[in-house]
Image (cartoon, rainbow, N blue to C red; front, side):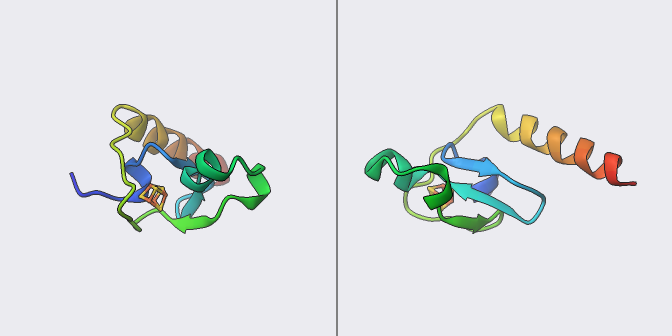
Length: 69
Ligand code: SF4
């Protein structure tokens, strides 16, 4: 599996296109509004595998897509 934000432990999904990166939050302890937004297919040197959460995220995105239809 490719390293991408969508399968990174620090990622907080918003929608199919992207989400928040919480990595900086852990370091600076800032509030959610200050988390930088990233695209789901981005990646950086701080990537850490999120394991099964990746499939949970995909399922959640699929459910959101169905709701809109
Ligand atoms: S920018 Fe880096 S640390 Fe943040 S979610 Fe993406 S890969 Fe993870």
